[in-house]
Image (cartoon, one colour):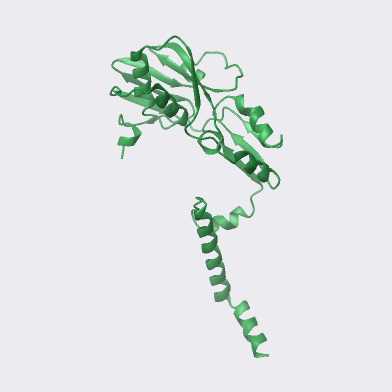
Length: 237
């Protein structure tokens, strides 16, 4: 009788229940942290239990920030052109611009006088009194027709109002992404967002078994232009 009564008191005690919840959530957060998943607080665990739809960003999330297969099409770039492009691309934090910078292999870059980063569109700046732009086609030429469908993400280059050429970057997906998407689609509905064109639609639809939705050319709601320091990312802090 005493064992049963003591058990009932312990189970029904609010303090015991509170401690049980606290210890359980803390242990779950530790387990997730071992896998590189860090939650803001324990309340997120409860919210995760009610998830029905999963939205994933493409570039830099399910794709690798590096190891893009980079190609170039257009006028042959001189060493000066490469140096101008690399000098501006060095200040961008977007994975595509960083891949172009690595691809050009320019050792010594110019000092950028000033530049602006337009979220979802591109980056532009002045270097040695020359105007350089890197971004999507509409950013380089606002009145240009829409891009044609292709199997690569495209980054256009503008130098003093002219477009010498365009870089094509083929995405490399993180190992295990396809297996993860197949596992997720059995429990949740899926959407994949991208600021690029719809070049990866068929590939991603095959990964999700045709059940996920792919939304391309997704831009931030805000059109705010972010001014940045002229120091490259690795020297800003």
